[in-house]
Image 1 (tube, rainbow, N blue to C red):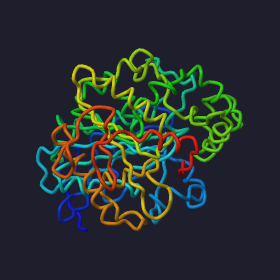
Image 2 (spheres, rainbow, N blue to C red):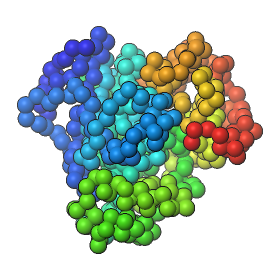
Image 3 (cartoon, rainbow, N blue to C red):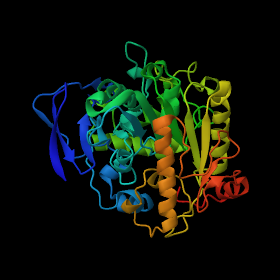
Image 4 (cartoon, helix red, strand yellow):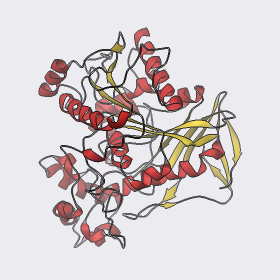
Amino acid sequence: METKIINTSMGDIKCREYDDRIEIRGLRYATAKRWEYPTPVNSWEGVYDATEFGACSPQERAFTNDEETAPFFYKEFREGQTFTYDEDCQNLNITAPKDAKNCPVFIYIYGGAFVSGSADEGYFGGDELAKEGIIWVAMNYRVSAYGFCSHPDLKDGEGKCGNYGLFDQLTAIQWVKDHIAEFGGDPNRIILGGQSAGGMSVDLLLSTSQLKKIGLKGAVLMSSAGIQRSIVKPKTPEKMKAFWDKVIEYAGKKNIFELRDETTDEELYWAWNKAYQEGKIPLMNALPTYDGVLITKENFKMSTVPTDIPMVVSVTSKDMFCIALLKMSQAFVKKASRNGNKVWMANFARQLPGDNAGPYHSSDIIYLFNRLEHNWRPFEDVDRKIANQMCKSICAFIKTGDPNCPEIPEWKVGRDMPMRFCEDSKMTPWDKKYMFDKTIHNDGPI
């Protein structure tokens, strides 16, 4: 690895240079104080050192031993890596082919239930996409208490409240639209994707007027489509007040403003975590809410699923509550397919080698980005074949709006016959009996 100086209208950038690509790490796209909306960063003085990853949002592993508190996913995705944490974490990573020119762009939003995650975890990256002439971008955004506080007393002059993490994401996407041409990208060929909470973020943003102005050319929703449009609809800040009043109480403060101004990252986290763990369904207190501007009851519902951009929607065979997730995803696809819009469904069904976790929630990501070498498992030739198939098909979708490619059998649109990526990849009906059994027994890592 060597370094290279890139000249842009924003300022010079020092980045990493490899034989076939450049990597820009930790480049700031915005800045924000606690529970304030992001302010874009479009210039800087001197040379910006973008050779190391930037900080991600504070989360549980910032204050605990991740190897002990989340052993499965630590071993799967983070073993051997180090991370830094900061609320002011609005930075992004760009991987681009050398001498890129008018390349399509894939912006990827990481998952983590809106309470964790980082743009530099080992299970995804853009090196294989760069070989296919694609620019890959991933942003850090605020999560948990730092990104999704929605106490009604925090409403601003526009009447918006909460979803700071979603506004981070939108700001990053707009930053890419404005500046990616300087890195060889085509601002009119942007595809947005994500998995789990990242895919839910894509879903949440798709119906907003702000994202529509950017003009996406496609979307990829992995293990996520339709979740907040159906059974776990957003709450209003008023409905979230009781939860945040508990956080205030547990932090020993009098009001939300003292909580904002007089607590450290760690004090806020543990007060939030205590209230979060007491919830009947803890996740419900971490999800995005109706903020009044970006996400509203009027613009975010099943009837507003967009029908003007192609999509790929996927579910794994042993996903999180997989039969319910499949039903929600199929309902989403039905709506998205109106007016002839093209939507392809995928089912990742490979029984991963090394243990009995199977095609668990998020197991497909490392195959999609063809990064098996970043994982501990004793992968076989068939795994490398599946990873190549998935990576080539998503690259085809990013380039053309259609995931069909020579590496896979014909993949038709529709919700009943997905492309099942497994030992014998092909279109085949969903194995609903298997998925129902895995949902009932809940025997995966999640």
